[in-house]
Image (cartoon, rainbow, N blue to C red; front, side, top):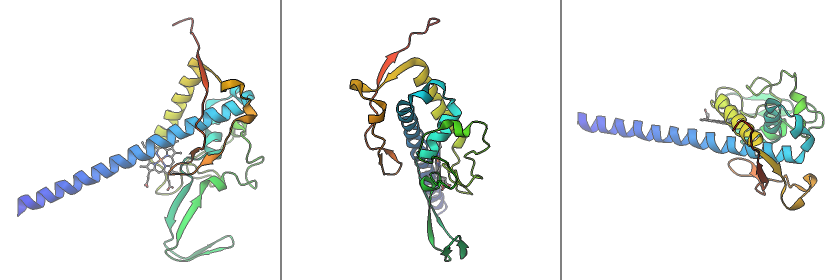
Length: 204
Ligand code: HEM
């Protein structure tokens, strides 16, 4: 009897570990890769920004326009009023981070890619500036912020340091299609196709 109990407990712990590991891989890989692809696309679309862009501001602005996980579901634990909305107890509420971060009330030229808007600005993604919450907010906000940002920063730095990037077949930057495709994360409808030329470093 005791052995059976121990076996069942071990199975439950194993299953929990598997689910947690799946969560971490699922939530941690696609989001960072999608953000890097959008950042590269925005830089190709806005070549002037590419020349002088500060990585931190580019990533912040990319996450504002293209939060990879744009809808965060919650259930209300009491009835309340938010603006003109009456939220009943136990209502399923879906926060639209994408729409919040493009609200012209908070963001001048909301749909434009302007990394410099974050230059010297205190707005960050840690869940306290509610007009900008690409990692969510509250107790269930993303626990992988530091890892996610480091991932994107490293990938972008390596891509930009080692290669020169061009759009293929003489395509102009204004022709680059920025349509989104909705899924578990918001990816590009057309994958980003670029021509890379290796930059030879003199110290290599
Ligand atoms: C650019 C990168 C990333 C973005 C934009 C992002 C965004 C998000 C968002 C919006 C949520 C939902 C938060 C909420 O409901 O309030 C979330 C949850 C989560 N993220 Fe991330 N994430 C990123 C990277 C990562 C990484 C690298 C990891 C781990 C290695 C990770 C692990 C998780 C986990 C486990 C959850 C679920 C938390 C919970 O439900 O309690 N994320 N993420």
